Length: 193
Image 1 (cartoon, rainbow, N blue to C red):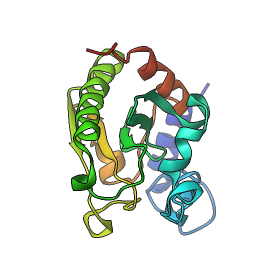
Image 2: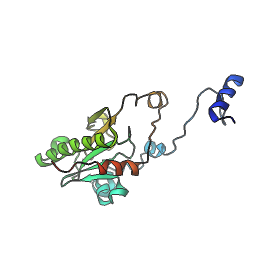
Image 3: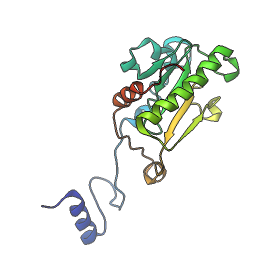
């Protein structure tokens, strides 16, 4: 019995190219990711206006499961990124609709910092990443997809996670559904220090 890989290798050896559908035959395989079109089209991005026009204002009004909320604090909350760079990509958001880091109160700054530490601890316990990227993109020109509502990224990283798929293939492979990732991280969220 031939496996898919055996059949592919046999096809490549005999034909030199792999043609699995319409278009110009070439040696490139395609991994179709139609859900990415929502991000490209800007769906769920909102208008940036406070309230229903801002996804980060709307998320806290949803259930944890529906909104992908991992943990709620008094002034900030942790939510999974709907379009993650890697599995477990968290965002720490103030409830208050503000765009600039300097507009945070001292209490908001302290809770945002504490949630960043707790998020890293939860991710370490849940999935043992080798490192993290932490940061905020202040303004559209700096790369903020939703510039009107401040949010800090916690991106877990593993050796080899920036392999050919995202670099060459421009595709990210996610090993589990976002709801499953949310549940796993929430179970590992540390108790207040």
